[in-house]
Structure formats: structure tokens, C-alpha cells
Length: 79
Image 1 (cartoon, rainbow, N blue to C red):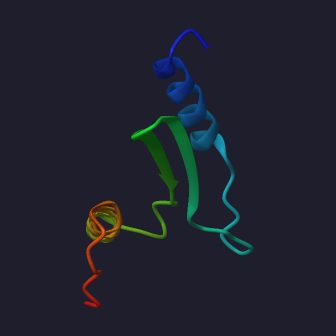
Image 2 (spheres, rainbow, N blue to C red):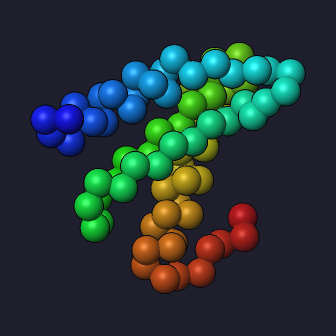
Image 3 (tube, rainbow, N blue to C red):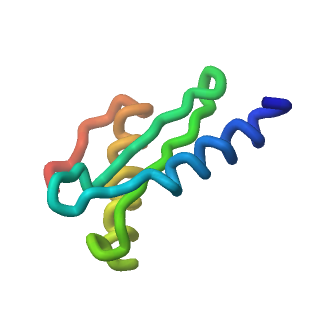
């Protein structure tokens, strides 16, 4: 790869083409790419049949909350 952008795009295209078996799963697929210390990319793939826009918004907020809690060392609110 010439640069990180090309590498990210190549992995994105690979994840985009990954087949999902709705009967056998897994339905939620995740790929993590560590670029350098403190910089990474998380690819999350889920079929549109399994999550609408509101569900995805909730998922992203929960993921952000968990990530922020982890990096700040604070306690996760059980709600």
C-alpha cells in the first residue's frame, strides 16, 4: 500500500464484500485495524435486515460510551 488511506480503503472493500449467513451467523462482523499508537479503525458490518437506523444509532452510542469509559478509566454505568 502507498499509504494508510489505501490500506483502509482495501480493508473496507474486503469487509463490504464479506458474505453474511443469516441462518448460521455471525450476523455482526467486526474488523479492527491498528494503524499506529492511539490511531485505529473499527469496521462493523451488519445486514440492513438486522438493524434499522435507530438501532445502529443506539449501537454506535453504546460503543462510544464503552470506548470512552475504557480510555478514561471510569466506571461503566450499568444502564
